[in-house]
Amino acid sequence: MTENPAPAIRATNVFAANCPSRRVLDHVTSKWGVLVIVALAQSPMRWGALRRRIEGVSEKMLAQTLRTLEADGFVLREAQPTIPPRVDYSLTPLGRSLAARLIPLVTWVGNNADEIVGAH
Amino acid sequence: MTENPAPAIRATNVFAANCPSRRVLDHVTSKWGVLVIVALAQSPMRWGALRRRIEGVSEKMLAQTLRTLEADGFVLREAQPTIPPRVDYSLTPLGRSLAARLIPLVTWVGNNADEIVGAH
DNA sequence: CAGGATCCCATCTGATACTG
DNA sequence: CAGTATCAGATGGGATCCTG
Image 1 (cartoon, rainbow over the protein chains, first blue to last red):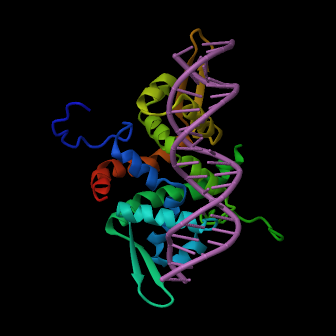
Image 2: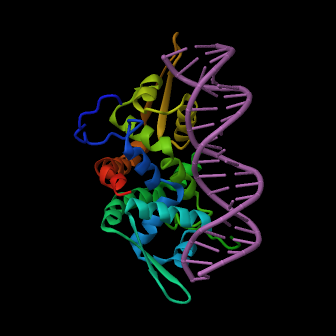
């Protein structure tokens, strides 16, 4: 922290405590973040549709999650200035790239959850 | 829930609120769970090694995370009854299967974290 | 319809201290 | 060495009410 002469981006290490990738990983693997990304990967959606698709999410957490993912550049928010308001959410190219790594994981969990829970 | 004649494992849906896959997904994507799985995928490790490898994890959370992952059947815990005690952790076949889906995600985050954080 | 603001509880998290 | 126990603060998450 005292001396830092251009660290040359050493392929960020998630195991390092101070590494920014930790924060990104937390966003990406957050409880609702995963489901939002996967849902939007299947199809762009409006706020209400997302809320219905992701059962159990509160308005607060959906809003918060979407804001975080938008700030990270994963989600694109498009608000139409109409009455009533209409807001469409979709994945950015970065978000689609992420989704490609997330979907196999979610799929795997979906296929193996039964035996895992049953093992308890 | 009223009629359920052998539900034939309908590929559990993570979007359903009551689905057990939700719980598994939360374990798998938990803050420290991801790092533990990935760390053990690289090599089995003892408690102390894990603690040093995963910077920033407290003893409490490491213990708790390991217990959860062991209960889920992802991690194998082998305690040798020696003095001083020695405990080795490794992935089960199920854990390795999971790791195969987790590592691409973590790798991706590691490679893209810089531009994502930079975007803020 | 799509949120923002607020309150409140559960869980996470980090020190510290202690044990076999 | 490999944990467990406990406490206190921070954060996550949900319910409710309110607004453009």
